[in-house]
Length: 292
Image (cartoon, rainbow, N blue to C red; front, side, top):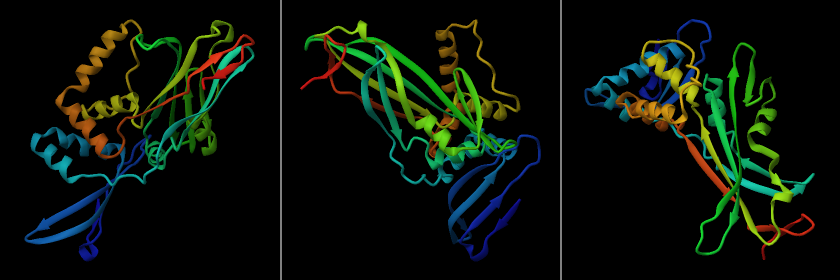
């Protein structure tokens, strides 16, 4: 551990630990230290490896130290990068209704920094086709597509990992990772023959970004409990409702509430975005007709 108080301006603390699969975490901390009437204002740059992160976060579980840690350690916010979902086109291709959309600035510098320091991040997409009914009736879902993209960084290979439902890919190309996260082309929603002329439809897109994926969060919980082990695999014998109740019970515990608060303070909390198309219909020839 080293500390440099030169000029009492910059506090530089470096903590490291050796071991396999060690990836460092960096938090930039605003510090205001009062020592016998003197004040030191500046930035404390804290470099933490996974092992030291365990020690650091474990102190939060002491009630008094948790209050001190959460109020004194305020992460510097990342440079603002507005993320929004934009629908580019709706079209009929090979007798199917498909949508093209993109997410502006989804893969932010902040998100990439987290991946390079050992986090697995995820983006969950839900695309729904709705049938719009009369004024007195609510709209109904015609069809729905859900998929997820996860990414992290493999320090030994010095490559990014892209994980989808049917593929796990290693790449050194940041542009490729960005395209997987941000560009979505030809997402099929329904057969054109299943859409009826004279009816009105619209499409919604919901995007949930988790800079700290459930796997990473469970791994951190294991570290805090003194169990350094991979994230537990889901039990296929458990129902979704049972798993959801267990997850909710875990998330509602006092230590996990503090952990989630700390994650939010460091800018790695969940983000939710949405987009909605204009209302459209299908004519007799199977072509899209926009509502005027």
